[in-house]
Structures are given as structure tokens and as C-alpha cells.
Image 1 (cartoon, protein in one colour):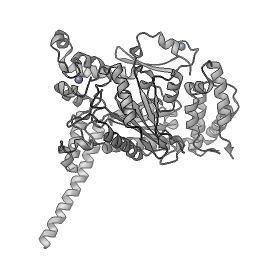
Image 2 (cartoon, helix red, strand yellow):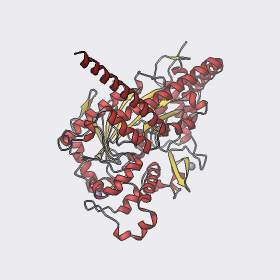
Image 3 (cartoon, protein in one colour):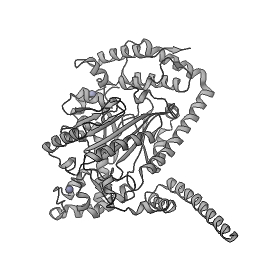
Image 4 (cartoon, chains in turn green, brown):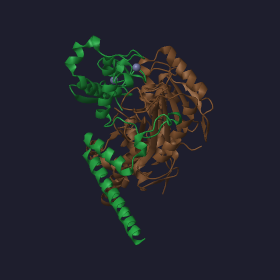
Length: 190
Length: 344
Ligand SMILES: [Zn+2]
Ligand SMILES: [Zn+2]
């Protein structure tokens, strides 16, 4: 594959650039890539992360509002543990340490709702964490779990997925009722 | 010792591989944006020392430092799916522990302190997850991992928090590609929380009709549910691809057959060939093999060849001096030599 700029050398590097909200993809050779100062790769990261971070910064930024953010530069919260500022997190879309999740909890909760559509972990946990946390999710019934997932799918605007979950819930509920009905019958027979 | 790309399995006519990545961080160090040079070195040392004895069926993991390698070696490891783009670029101390069969690896100081990776051939995410869990459990015995009671496994970027899980299928979709269905499919998949991207991941173009399909969200669903949801989308993609293939075979068999044999001929006898052309021709031959239009003496070689003819992989075999003209000649030579014989 040839470079999209010089059309001479072999393209080795893939670039994505976001300009005015439009995504532009390019295949470049090393020489031409080095000359592209606007590309985010020059910050030492692959541009894909850049686009993700832009997206994230937009979300995080919109929670507090752009103007508000600039005016209150000095009063912006910092993480006590690693010293990273709220502004830094906004700019790079990354946290400085594990403690940041608690330091910026309000922002974390809101942004996780938007990015992930949820803010509670379900699933694998380290052996040593198991005693300290009795996750409520583990004790939920299948239908309760599905209902939670359904709410989350609706919030994420994944309507097809929501419809699938709703159907799954109906089937499950139908089965439960059926089982209950049978139990009743057994009881009366006894 | 069989590599993952030589493996037969479920839906192997469409699915090339199943990959799990788990993001994990150590309690002891700040995340990568706040990690100093000294801490990066200490992190690499500590992980390599504590995990010294880690092994799988193929033997004890090999350990190496990535940032001290030359760029060609790093790119070549990227082309073989051993390391990620971030690892190629990063200047700070980065390391890799990899099983001899390349099915399992641990990247050290990527975007997170640890990225556990497990690969299997064809559609078998369950097995990939089991393998990744084995590594994860072993690591938890040896190192103190960041875990939050509400948010789960903590990661530098909130897009990975919770399970830290990225499950990704590599699929071959020539018929859907030819029908011009991919853009629509990518949009549709998004509604189900699934991403479809090019052969080398985020930000890369699709090459030779090879795509990666993976989950977007990592929080609020168990690992099993994430995979189940992903599978339901992937199975639909597979069935659509199979239906399109059947249609092409039924309506256009002689044209297709001719194209496949021609591709074989060019690959067998070309004296120089660039990556893009070679990928297109290999893709057609793979299509021929997967639809049983042709039978090759040595099966499942084509995808491996696709990886090996990538620029950095070739360059590594050639040494540093080669320019792109020499590479094109070497690429042709390599293909002439390794292309499996046709069985009539
Ligand atoms: Zn160029
Ligand atoms: Zn912090």
C-alpha cells in the first residue's frame, strides 16, 4: 500500500484525525507522517486514543460546562493522591491513579453513565476482594438482572438490544409463572 | 506446537481468531499518565520477577523489553498481533511476557500496567476467556491488583473500567465486502454496543476484507454476558456472510472460480508485488479455500502469509537496508516459496 501523501513510499502508519467533527483516515509513510504536525501521534500516542479522548473530554466537559471550567481554573479539584488536576483528566481522558476514581467521584459517576451506560461493576473480582464486598448484583434473580440491563440499554439508546432483553424477560417471566402455577396445583392436590 | 492461526474450529471459514484482553493495574504505582521513568522501570522489574515462573502448555513465558528493541522488530510484533500500537510508540520502559506458542501474553506498561492477552483460532471465546482467567488468577496471587468495590477493576481510561475486558473476533468477510454491506453493518453493530474495525484495530482501514469485531462497554455486565451479547451479533454477521457466499457461488461460480485460479497464478509466479496487491490476491485465494472452491495441500496457511508479508515482518527477515522495491521482490519470493500447492 502506498502513502496517501507522496504516493511513492510504502505506507506504514495509519492515522485518524478529527477536524471540525469530521473523521479523516490516512495511510502514511514514515517520512510523510513525521511532517504532519497536527496529527496527535506527535504527542507520542496513537491517534486512535486521541479520538477516543476527544470524545471523552467532550462528555466530561459537558458535565461541568466549558465556560465554567475555564473561569474556575484554580478552584478545580485535584486528586490528593497523585496530584492530577480535573483539567488534566479532561484533556487526556485518563486518570492519574486508582484513587482518582474516588477523588472525582461525582464526575466519574456521571461520565460512566454516559460512556458505559452503567456505574456498577458486575463480574469477576479478585479473591481477596470477595469478603469485603457483598455485591448486591450477585444476589439478584435472573429477571432482576435482566431488568437492570434493560434499563441500561434504554439509557444507552440501544433499542434493538433493549427489545431483545425485553423479549428474554417475557420468556423468563412466562416460565416463572408456569412453574409457580404448577406448584400451586401440586399443593392443592396434596 | 500449533500456533493459533493454524487451528481449525467452529466457523473457521469466517472467524480467524478469538482474542481476550484484560486490563489490570497494580495498587502500588500511579497510572501511566503519572508514572515516572523510575517507576516504569520498577514496574517492569517487579512484574517480570514476580511472574518469573508463569507458564502454559507450551512452556515458561519468554520475557523481553520492548522499548529497547528497534522499531522494525516492534512493528513486526504488532503485525503478528503480539503487541499493540501503543506499545510500538511508547518511549517509557515497556515489557512483554509471552508464551512460546504466542497464545498468551502480558504487556507491561501499555496504557495500563498490565494487559493480559489470550488468543485462540476460530470462534472459541470461551476458551480464550478461560485462558485469560488462568493468567489473571495467577497474577492476583503474586501482585496486588487495583480493584474498587463499586467500579471493579480500575483502569487509566474509564472506557475500560469494570471488567477491563475487550473480547475481539477477527473475521473474514469478503462476500459482505463485495456486496458493499460493511458500512451499514458497522452502523447496525454500534446499536448493539459492538464495534467493527479494520485488520489492525482502531483507526486502521480494513484490509483484504478482514475485520475485528469487539465489545464497546466494559462495565455493568459480567464477562460472560458481554461475550454472549457480542456472540449474538457475530453469529448474525457470520450467517449473513455465509448467505452472501452461497449466493455468489450459486449465481457466479465460473467467474469466481476463474478469478481464484488467476489469483493463485499471479501469487505463484509474480516477481514483485506490493502489500496491497498481495493482500487482495491472498484474500481471493482464502475465499476460494474457505468456500472449498479450491483445496490447498497445506490448509490454513493464507492468514499466516497475510501477516508475514506485512512490511515490517518482511523487513525484519531482510535486514535494515531494504527499500520498498527490494521488499516487493522479497515479498514475491516469499509468497512463491510458501504458497501451498493446489490439490486438483
Ligand atoms: Zn509518504
Ligand atoms: Zn489520582
